Image 1: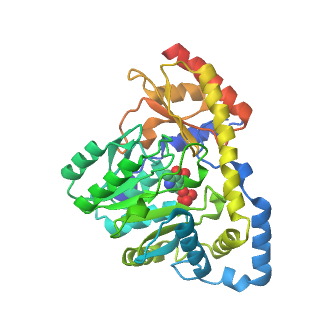
Image 2: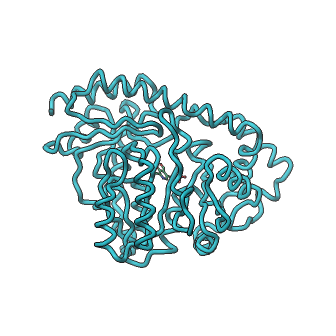
Length: 395
Ligand SMILES: Cc1ncc(COP(=O)(O)O)c(C=O)c1O
């Protein structure tokens, strides 16, 4: 059969990450390529208990169709948690439960973007979001990252250059892939520009609870007074990504439109998973669990940082994240990271080439992403040793 695929998906490259991950199915390959949370952070016992109890006491609620907005007790528990811990959510705001942040990002694009409309984003940025933008016909346009977040000067220029820009997409905490945190000044400046140019600011914050150094910076949503910001959160990194539960907090009228979109995608998020997330959130251990996470990530990061210091040449510049899952390594301009990552894979270490995170799928990058949350300590050390030896050969 000659499948005549739609233009929307024809433009989606089978991502470089997927290609790299193919190599990682070989057990002899050390993978620093994943974007997974640390498996020892999953509260397995507690989830097992909650799910068993739900199936014992409320099976019909879990198994019956639910409403698209989400399981009502979870919606209000999420709203309370956002308000109490992050000061996120105002009078005009509501919460929509989504099947992972990925769906939230797709729903906003679906709701706002016509074919060819522009989504401004950090360059580099999370490849899953780039693909969500493209899948709904939007065109991602990258705005360069600096050490303290998106370049505000370049953002203003991009707003001027693209009158059909509808969304600014930011990952302000421990960004994927760079690990960079956006400063308070830049959060304010980005919000002001969105107001001036009529863009919705999509604040994607899946890693906010994984801070292991430095001080919390207020979410952009806390500064929102007119519905400009749509805040996107997820249980993927604090509970488990496999349950596929995330949430949006934003203006009620905007969310009503996204809810219609959700009805065309999956009707509602998995009922059992929502109910388990609710019990987890309100069951008494939630805050203690959140407090336990930074230590796990701090320790893993330390292992990678020590290995970088020991093995990498100084010409390879690495970011020093204050949380999250990733370190970003930038090589001198003469080194193409795609070729470097290919060679690293031949030496049995997988990292993700920077080009995978660019808004232009044919762009080139001199950087690559390393993950420290999933591999074992020994794998981090050995992976960095092998990468370091290769880097010394190149630089
Ligand atoms: C920045 C960012 N946003 C969203 C997601 C997807 O999260 P979810 O599992 O909630 O769909 C990820 C996953 O790695 C991510 O890095």
